[in-house]
Image (cartoon, rainbow, N blue to C red):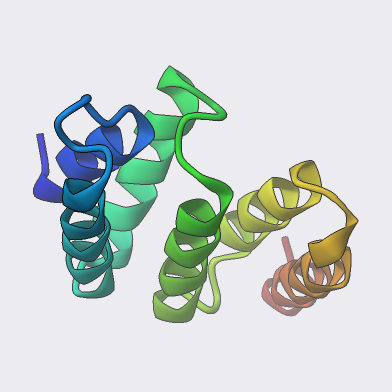
Amino acid sequence: MSELLGLARRLAAPTAEERGDLLENLLQEFVEELTFSSAEDIVNMLRTMLQQDWMGLPPWARNLAFRLACLQRPDDAELLRVAAADLIAFGPDWNDVARGLQAEADRIEAASGD
């Protein structure tokens, strides 16, 4: 199991010990690990977490993870679509961003002839 996935699992279901003061340390560890993870590691973590407990990972953590993965893979139409769908699932606040991701995925696919 990757370090990022382990931290994501702890973030999704912190132990009683990790709540409170220790939660800040967990958040910092997660953000630091996520920041320097490859797109492949991030996508694998998201895939696993979403399959295991769709609502387990906090929306802010999902948004950040998708954003960092999309920045590393700007021409990955499938990733852009998955990120857009995830944003739409959490309400209208991010629908404009989601539509932008979908439009970019459409543009990429049209340019590649898919």
